[in-house]
Length: 134
Image 1 (cartoon, rainbow, N blue to C red):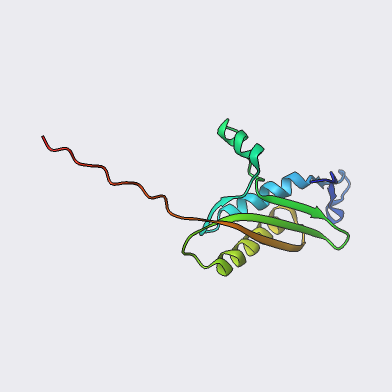
Image 2 (image 1 turned 135 degrees about the vertical axis):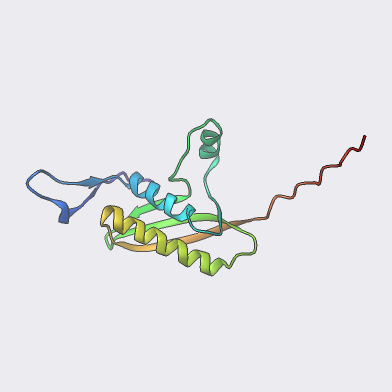
Protein backbone atom coordinates (compact mmCIF):
# COMPACT_ATOMS: atom_id res chain seq x y z
CA UNK A 1 0.00 0.00 0.00
CA UNK A 2 1.54 3.26 -1.12
CA UNK A 3 -0.25 5.51 1.34
CA UNK A 4 -0.07 4.87 5.06
CA UNK A 5 -3.22 6.49 6.42
CA UNK A 6 -5.06 5.71 9.60
CA UNK A 7 -8.83 5.32 9.39
CA UNK A 8 -10.44 7.56 11.98
CA UNK A 9 -13.83 6.32 13.14
CA UNK A 10 -15.87 9.50 13.61
CA UNK A 11 -18.85 7.69 15.15
CA UNK A 12 -16.61 6.07 17.78
CA UNK A 13 -15.37 9.31 19.39
CA UNK A 14 -16.30 9.70 23.03
CA UNK A 15 -15.00 11.24 26.25
CA UNK A 16 -12.22 8.65 26.50
CA UNK A 17 -10.58 9.44 23.18
CA UNK A 18 -10.79 8.39 19.55
CA UNK A 19 -10.49 5.07 17.74
CA UNK A 20 -8.17 4.68 14.76
CA UNK A 21 -7.77 1.58 12.60
CA UNK A 22 -4.71 0.87 10.49
CA UNK A 23 -5.27 -0.31 6.89
CA UNK A 24 -3.15 -3.37 7.71
CA UNK A 25 -5.82 -4.44 10.19
CA UNK A 26 -8.44 -4.21 7.45
CA UNK A 27 -6.20 -6.30 5.18
CA UNK A 28 -5.91 -9.04 7.82
CA UNK A 29 -9.65 -9.12 8.54
CA UNK A 30 -10.50 -9.20 4.82
CA UNK A 31 -7.87 -11.88 4.15
CA UNK A 32 -9.18 -14.20 6.84
CA UNK A 33 -12.80 -13.62 5.78
CA UNK A 34 -11.99 -14.38 2.13
CA UNK A 35 -9.96 -17.50 2.89
CA UNK A 36 -12.85 -18.94 4.96
CA UNK A 37 -15.10 -19.19 1.88
CA UNK A 38 -15.53 -22.69 0.44
CA UNK A 39 -13.95 -22.89 -3.00
CA UNK A 40 -10.98 -20.63 -2.22
CA UNK A 41 -7.75 -22.61 -2.50
CA UNK A 42 -5.27 -19.90 -1.47
CA UNK A 43 -4.86 -16.18 -1.33
CA UNK A 44 -2.48 -14.64 -3.84
CA UNK A 45 0.72 -13.22 -2.42
CA UNK A 46 4.06 -12.10 -3.75
CA UNK A 47 7.49 -13.73 -3.55
CA UNK A 48 8.35 -12.10 -0.22
CA UNK A 49 5.21 -13.36 1.51
CA UNK A 50 5.88 -16.87 0.17
CA UNK A 51 9.39 -16.85 1.64
CA UNK A 52 8.14 -15.46 4.95
CA UNK A 53 5.50 -18.20 5.20
CA UNK A 54 8.12 -20.87 4.57
CA UNK A 55 10.07 -19.43 7.49
CA UNK A 56 7.04 -19.81 9.73
CA UNK A 57 5.50 -16.33 9.63
CA UNK A 58 1.85 -16.45 8.58
CA UNK A 59 0.65 -13.39 6.65
CA UNK A 60 -3.13 -13.15 6.95
CA UNK A 61 -3.27 -9.99 4.83
CA UNK A 62 -1.79 -11.80 1.83
CA UNK A 63 -3.68 -11.16 -1.39
CA UNK A 64 -5.58 -8.15 -0.05
CA UNK A 65 -5.07 -4.52 -1.01
CA UNK A 66 -6.90 -1.69 0.74
CA UNK A 67 -7.31 1.70 -0.93
CA UNK A 68 -8.55 4.73 0.98
CA UNK A 69 -10.38 6.92 -1.51
CA UNK A 70 -12.48 10.04 -1.10
CA UNK A 71 -15.65 8.06 -1.86
CA UNK A 72 -14.82 5.35 0.67
CA UNK A 73 -12.71 2.26 1.18
CA UNK A 74 -12.07 -0.15 -1.69
CA UNK A 75 -10.80 -3.66 -0.94
CA UNK A 76 -9.18 -5.75 -3.69
CA UNK A 77 -8.93 -9.49 -2.99
CA UNK A 78 -6.79 -11.79 -5.18
CA UNK A 79 -7.58 -15.50 -4.85
CA UNK A 80 -6.83 -18.87 -6.38
CA UNK A 81 -10.02 -20.91 -6.83
CA UNK A 82 -10.39 -24.68 -6.57
CA UNK A 83 -11.12 -26.33 -9.92
CA UNK A 84 -14.76 -27.29 -10.41
CA UNK A 85 -16.48 -24.65 -8.30
CA UNK A 86 -18.68 -21.89 -9.68
CA UNK A 87 -16.43 -18.83 -9.85
CA UNK A 88 -19.28 -16.25 -9.79
CA UNK A 89 -20.85 -17.93 -6.73
CA UNK A 90 -17.53 -18.08 -4.85
CA UNK A 91 -16.76 -14.45 -5.76
CA UNK A 92 -20.15 -13.29 -4.45
CA UNK A 93 -19.61 -15.23 -1.22
CA UNK A 94 -16.16 -13.64 -0.83
CA UNK A 95 -17.63 -10.16 -1.31
CA UNK A 96 -20.41 -10.83 1.17
CA UNK A 97 -18.12 -12.42 3.79
CA UNK A 98 -15.52 -9.63 3.59
CA UNK A 99 -18.17 -6.91 3.81
CA UNK A 100 -19.92 -8.57 6.74
CA UNK A 101 -16.68 -9.24 8.65
CA UNK A 102 -15.45 -5.66 8.27
CA UNK A 103 -18.84 -4.21 9.17
CA UNK A 104 -19.12 -6.41 12.27
CA UNK A 105 -15.56 -5.97 13.54
CA UNK A 106 -14.84 -2.34 12.64
CA UNK A 107 -18.13 -0.66 11.76
CA UNK A 108 -16.62 0.48 8.46
CA UNK A 109 -18.81 0.64 5.37
CA UNK A 110 -17.01 -0.34 2.18
CA UNK A 111 -17.35 1.36 -1.18
CA UNK A 112 -16.46 -1.85 -3.04
CA UNK A 113 -15.00 -5.33 -2.64
CA UNK A 114 -13.30 -6.35 -5.88
CA UNK A 115 -12.47 -10.04 -6.32
CA UNK A 116 -9.65 -10.96 -8.70
CA UNK A 117 -9.44 -14.66 -9.60
CA UNK A 118 -5.77 -15.08 -10.48
CA UNK A 119 -5.59 -18.84 -10.79
CA UNK A 120 -7.21 -22.24 -10.55
CA UNK A 121 -5.84 -25.01 -8.37
CA UNK A 122 -6.32 -28.55 -9.52
CA UNK A 123 -6.43 -31.35 -6.99
CA UNK A 124 -2.99 -32.73 -6.37
CA UNK A 125 -2.67 -36.08 -7.98
CA UNK A 126 -0.85 -38.61 -5.89
CA UNK A 127 0.44 -41.72 -7.54
CA UNK A 128 -0.90 -44.93 -6.07
CA UNK A 129 1.72 -46.68 -4.01
CA UNK A 130 2.67 -50.16 -5.05
CA UNK A 131 1.83 -52.93 -2.63
CA UNK A 132 4.76 -55.23 -2.01
CA UNK A 133 3.67 -58.78 -1.26
CA UNK A 134 6.03 -61.00 0.62
